[in-house]
Image (tube, rainbow, N blue to C red):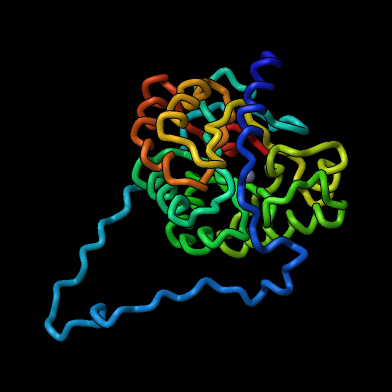
Length: 278
Ligand SMILES: [Zn+2]
């Protein structure tokens, strides 16, 4: 892959680092342990009506799509920036989750469209707990894969080794206890900031595959619908790992166009587990 193109991808990603940090970093764990989402208040009008009403019709969920027929390749050691395959597959990866509603809408997009996605989540954001029940069947079927993005979106290069481990371990424990899956060996260093030291600290607890990207929707900050579509046209290409974010609503308004773009280009969106044998 041409280095200049990769660098421009990094610049696109790096141009929008205005992500609000979680208010609950690992070092504040004890203080935050009692934090709970406020329970919704029920307005009086929502009280049960005395008149009988028919039971709500629960639409049966669409069947989980079968995994795509992709010839798996052995997971190479070290950093991933693309998919080492000649097949027309795209790793559509999505990070953070600072807006709970965007988490819900992305999960619902996956559920209704069958699109296979990899979420690199920060457990400090309430959306992952708010919408765990919606996500669980998608995760269990393998349609949505979960990767570790640290608990509080920490710049690992500014942390000591013990704090790097703590950030990854706390998020790991959250993912295991909430969703029942083990994200290892895949993690994404927040902002893409990593070096040999952070790689080694992460690897000490089994996170041996830092997942970078080769193209970005640049929506960690607020973008217009059209900007996101333009970047998708630029980067939704075979064997690419593309990064998006669960932080702002515009991407959720262009899901139909993004899905159509994948189809028009003859691509199949895949998870990392669809491509790599461990
Ligand atoms: Zn991030």
